[in-house]
Image (cartoon, rainbow, N blue to C red; front, side, top):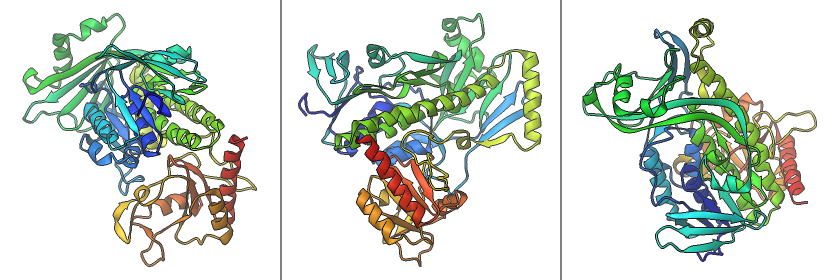
Length: 522
């Protein structure tokens, strides 16, 4: 592409930025991605991701390559200083709601390389590394000044849109003057990544949050031989001193001898809870760490950044394809309150883990042990998070509700006159009205859907039913039943717009979608 051809310039090619580049390119948008570094960061940072993220990678054709860098995510246990089980987080069992394991560990450098390699298949995507953004003017009609760090040359870009995915210290956010809302969490921690040497090392089989007031700490089983420890830095301790190799060895001594593992990375961080006041200024957007920072206790940092990208990408593509720019206002309307809820949930868990007062820790332990004995201490991680409640989701009319609106739509394995595949791979992109096999779509629903430019797809539960799509394990059908519904209208990012119990309600869903999209066109 020439310098003026890109519809969107994405600043920052970490996991969020490179995913956004792939999503936009897959939708036919002309994209240029830039990053000041000349290669991916060679050390791990994020380590956990969920099935919604893998679904995004599936949709851009990168899932197989990314899967090679992933590993099993073990259950997570909270334990007291004397080893008593206080809480346990588990994942849903098979059949998985989205076909992918609900949670996975991964190696970030390999993941980023896989996503950059995937981007090379799109002729409408240009990636420029060792290219620094040095100025951003006029966010209404952005003018970017780029500095090529190899040649020393400067050049201008005038894209229609800019997305800053340039991390916590975001140049884009600072250049726009966007303030961060402080959600009152600021705790210093040391993160240590170790690679186990050959041979057996007796380590926990699960991930563990050690709720020890003497020093709260965390253990995570990464993929292959990667193991991560995180140690809270106590009041009065010097982060630089605690990050010295001999101090790290001392902290790890209860688990490892020096000859059993080698240090891959250690770093000190302040775990923050911050959300940008604005996620959009005219034609410039923020995504990922550039607009929110989440404490790591539920491994939601990169996960939520990827979901930002999925939310924004289809809306940018829709608008670039001729839709109204007002649709882009739903990006902040949907994502910002959702992220605030996720951060508040994470903060509450963080407060449990980070308690340093021995008396309060004993009271906490007693309360949590009682909850375990009452059968309330084992939870499914995914059930902690809310649906999207604002923006482009159905509200329900004429006395019927849209249960499930704002949740991720299930993705079953399907079979038919083709190989076994995941549902998304059997459908075209875009809005998808899906109905269970036992409900017949009315002629009016079919006409209304054609008028809206979408096709109704029947997902049957029995091979004997006349449908091209037959799900293997009733994942979608059982989810619909739990919502007292037999049809669902799904957005391009696989978020549920709404559900319906019969054809008349499904017609109203499609009509409500048309009405809401038309409202953005006014």
